Amino acid sequence: MAADSLWSSLSPAREALPTLDGDTVADVVVVGGGLSGLWTTYYLLEAEPALDVVLLEAATLGSGASGRGGGWCSAALPPPPAEHPGTPEDDDGSWQLRAALRDAVVEVGGAAAAEQVACGFAYGGAVTVARNPAQLARLEQETAALQAWGDDVRMLDAGQVRELVRVEGALGGAVSPDAAVLDPVRLVRGLLDVVQARGARVHEGTRALRVSPGAVVTEQGTVRAPQVVRAVGAWAPQLSGTREVAPLVSTFVATEPLPEFVWAQLGFARHETVVDARRLHVRVRRSDDDRLVVGGPAIPDVGVLERTGDPVGRLHRTVTDMFPVLADVRLTHRWDAPLGLTRDRRPAVGADDDGLAWIAGVRDDAALANLAGRTVAALVTGADDPLVRLPWVNHHAGAWEPRPVRTAGLVASRLADAWADRVDRWTARTARH
Image 1 (tube, rainbow, N blue to C red):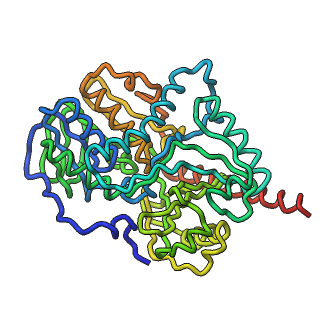
Image 2: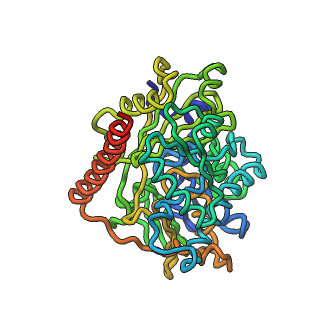
Image 3: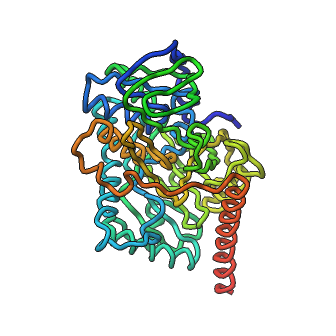
């Protein structure tokens, strides 16, 4: 199987952008060339076109979670409202945050259309599928909580699920319109073209050694700017020296292109995102070139992107269990995406009084990255924007434990989820007998 992501293989090779060439000054320096950093740059220049913005990327743009994820663009905000300690009645800020994220899905599609970025944006919605009674009961509770928080989500019976996607053994499901899919590499490249056309100075192969208020020190020189934005995802601990995020990794696979008669047996006519209702869930989608793309659950890393076990085998067994017609279909691509997880699993953005702004825990979702970029751009420019008053602004989840303890805790949590998923299946089989 190809080790590179499907998205990279579908886009033509391009020349690397130049590295930083010595010391320089700017109005704003953005560290991190994923979607969060690109959206931040885009909205900074939209708000103030005269800004001199420098964007630095250690490797190539989109080489982290943004370009190696599944191409998701959704209003799913971890953790789900069912786990939120407040209620819609006493927490208006969280209500507004969910509304802003739903709007962000539309914003991504609208911005891509306005800037003529052909990234395959398809507004197909999301279908979560329950395959045993325990999953169905939990999904009903989660759907009720989402409805209470204003989400346009509704339950489906087995027949209604089958009209959208034909998952083997589906007992029911839930559908939300607030989700889309896209090609993340094409979105990254399209945004790059736009921000460069508007004057941004973009440097690849420029690894930041230290990010501090007023300056970013790299191996090639120092960029001094009154405003600094840190948007480095899973690599934040290496750069900031803090334990604000824990690096996780998610494995993805893609099949060979499937003929139309197979898609007739699978569904996905509107390019829906399909999520199974397990705790350690997978997400499935159809690509522009008619492959099935499957993303696995995020698990603790052993050094970012270093893996143990057989994640591809697990994904293959899961997807063929969900879609038996794919049992003999060949997998052509396998890749990993590095993800950053905050201590309470809630993404956050913020800006300090000394001119240092940051984005944490956004992971690989284009809508969440868009909202983060718009919010940070408003914070940096001092705009009187409702986004800067949302509750994820300047939210600090606290530090993770040192690595051995942190890794042990995350592994234990994933093992507990896996065990609970097994119990759900065993209970269902016992009940049927």
